[in-house]
Length: 541
Image 1 (cartoon, rainbow, N blue to C red):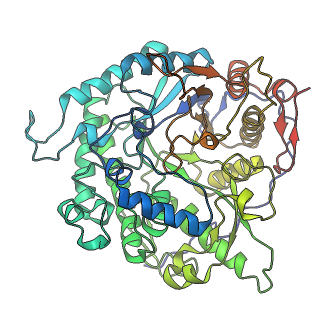
Image 2 (image 1 turned 180 degrees about the horizontal axis):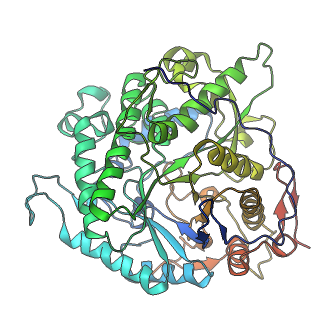
């Protein structure tokens, strides 16, 4: 059955920011319901819990062979990354430490908290492990997550739960740690990760377990976090688990298996936890700009359109309209409908941080044509033209958030929850610090303005979750100072006993001010802001 897709054009130009000073974040949804805006933070298990030794990333980040390979790839790409094991992370598996950070979240006037459940804790050795029902589910781990939900409930924070945030149990995926990837013995013993339909089956069984255990405690479920990022970095670039480079066939298989996994998990949650559950997925979207330098023949525009289609649109179109495009190519009109994918989304989870400049790469065009173009990860090191950057070299583009929100609303007509948005900075200042004013607070203010702009224009935005409550371990940056996203800075150099000290930042104060007021108010005057285009920082008055 042929199917014509919609929304293939690049996003229409954003407007200048209107006056939103009197507009409230609490608003009326499209169906007339009252939307009590969710203000919160987002985390993921492997980045905050610490000492997780049973998943693919614990193998990937500890292997000397893998680290050397990733380092070589980074040098070729002229980017500075650092792959290391997270160790204790920020110790959130310790309920006392977790509870303290929950209370810090509440102290900011927030009302929501996104966390992920670690599949490898729930089912550490697979179904063959002896368990109460022969499934291998660890009831102690389930009880521990239940106590974490208790702490959120006591603080009055709405739990938003992610079921898969990049990691897989080792029995599902043991990344290759030898030169011959496909022949690696430990890799061959595992299910093979998302390349295998067996992984999809196992994931759905795990989802049934968790949704059954917590069906009366969780309203908002996120099945999978940034599936297309897993493909891009894990199967094409080689710097994330499982570490494959240019694996075009594997990557394509993974995309369709991930779509299937989401659709089947959606059905499982609805069946087990009830139709009142709200099921989404956290979709990572960068705002695509065409790199215009030396683009005489206009090939970069075509590469940008293909990249945008593949990484921003394919997944969402599959789980809403059921579209199966076997080639993943934008110009392919011979698509069909997969009925059990169709309508498997209650809300769109949007992870948005930045804009990128996309250009054609001859090797990518030859090896993975459906990936479209490429972009420079660190614009500061690339020497290319750019607007304001965070310390990772990511371009700041607040209007991109508005434009994506408008597109998602126009195209899919579903509520949208901003599941991640944040700013990486070495030294976000604390009140009274003598350091220069950082950009995290203006970043928060400017992006909150764009959210309110979208709400004013009729977009149904459920809430805004900042990444993250504290500085945590970052996948390919470890604990590098330039990758600090926390509203509370973590002093990792502290030699004292007990939890690593946390220091409240101006970014936290800015978010607190807006959340407590429910409007923008005088946030720009108090904390500064960034122009919608991302070209200028406007300091506080």
